[in-house]
Image 1 (cartoon, rainbow, N blue to C red):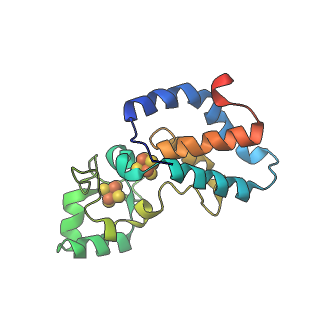
Image 2: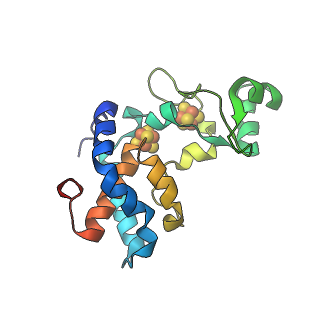
Image 3: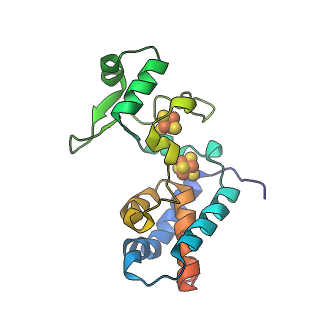
Amino acid sequence: MKKKSINIKAFHAEYKKKKKVLGPFIKNIHRRKIKGLRTLVNSSSDAVWKEIDCTRCANCCKQMTPTFTATDIKRVSTYLNMNRQEFIAKYLEKDEEGKEWINKKRPCQFLGNDNLCTIYEVRPYDCKGFPHLRHTRWLDQRQVFETNMEYCPATLKMIEMMYEMITGNSVIHK
Ligand code: SF4
Ligand code: SF4
């Protein structure tokens, strides 16, 4: 299947339409008895990545921020020939809880005009795994998925597929 370009405006409209059903579904998914959860997760994640090409989206890089671990900061700053302090002062700030380093601005300063990451080979660990659709503790990620599906077309698609497989219903006919 040829991967399609992602129209972010249309995606936001789709999210608004589906969140009333998918929000409560993912929030409470741990209360359901689900047979073969891992198989459902893997098959829906595979199906999502057959359709979605992140290089035609980059919405996470535009509207969200990764967290930077100490190792990320060291690796990326070295790559950019900067020292740790310079790198932090130029690009980062603490999150609201004062715990994690995050980007000062959005879109991410490392996103190129071609929608590609300019530090791809040394990008933060958080970016490498995002959106964590096959997370090993999948049910524990439910709140993260609920947040991410507002920004990430792959996550919205995955949660919708899970909904349809588990309930046997279609989201839009609900
Ligand atoms: S570091 Fe790269 S992959 Fe991560 S948010 Fe920035 S542009 Fe996107
Ligand atoms: S991870 Fe999600 S938001 Fe980021 S580029 Fe891929 S589909 Fe878009």
